[in-house]
Image 1 (cartoon, rainbow, N blue to C red):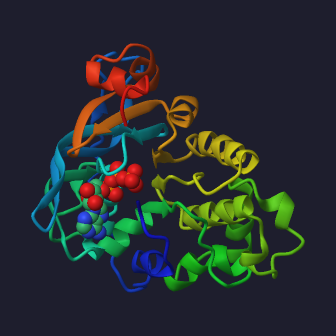
Image 2: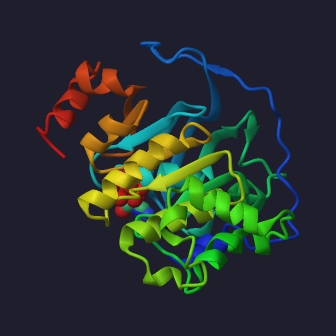
Length: 289
Ligand SMILES: Nc1ncnc2c1ncn2[C@@H]1O[C@H](COP(=O)(O)OP(=O)(O)OP(=O)(O)O)[C@@H](O)[C@H]1O
């Protein structure tokens, strides 16, 4: 579970002087074992990633490729390391003193743990949305413009704010009240505002840690529709406790089980209809977890 604080958000974006993370653009090709995803480009590639909190190992040798412009879901019982893995991708675990990461985690071919990678610049390319909506006590407009301002990002802010709110499916509801506080919106609207804030800097990857778990069914359904739309432009990685949600909205599913083990990673349909692993089948069918 990820904390839901402004500190975490600002830690990801508050150094306007940071250089852009250098990137290599040799995009490799990912082909799943069942190969229903035809030659999707790999955006994030984890190789033998292990994480410890002090002496406790939370993830064991995770290897997987996350395809571009698709929704990849991370599912598994509580405490199996889903959020920990998500936080490896944009180095949010750097903010946890006890955390220690080993292995390679590439973003378009560049290891994000290399010494020359600036985590702040990395987090511009890999945005994050948290479990509970966490707008700042600022206007709707300023919530979206915030990330742009602190990065000294150039451009027409009015246009970027409007486009981001449109992409987050919130514009029509708030276009006449952009000066109103973001905190006055409903929970579902607040979460869409947070999504607008995350996409304003135009990231390549959006990480979502149980983004609908604090919302009612209507708001959840809106967020699910939105996630599917976002995948047309962004690569989305979502942690969810809700297996039906993973089945509804994701293209790929990674099943983590207790002990921080990635037991199976494949096309979502395959995972839910015909998993290779008996343990995954038991988990999917509710025999444990
Ligand atoms: N900041 C931390 N300090 C120490 N241990 C932690 C910390 N964060 C997570 N852990 C431990 O790491 C393991 C994996 O936790 P993580 O939150 O990644 O699992 P999760 O699958 O996302 O769980 P949940 O579904 O309950 O959110 C757990 O044993 C947890 O107690």
